[in-house]
Length: 119
Image (cartoon, rainbow, N blue to C red; front, side, top):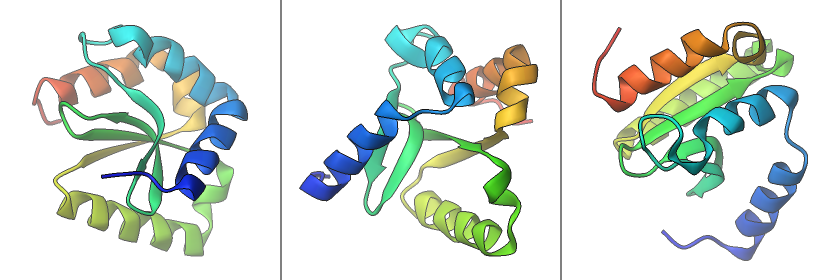
């Protein structure tokens, strides 16, 4: 799916202003470091920009900060996940704190998902 100029600009802006958790996880995912799979950072899918996306396995990894605890944000995230599932994209969600405090567990969960295991 072609990206619009607006989504391209939005993706670039997001890559330039990543959070500590996004930066830490990108160090794990970049250059095929996890399971030999290629990930894209701030990848647009339709009207959404995914934090990380593995196109070969159709796996999205989303990191949630404190703002994702608000009721309207929770509802938005649920709707977004449903729309991504309709495109056969599996969505993994982690709190920023999980990435910062338990990076091995997060990496292991992503790797198991890439390999087709379900917890």
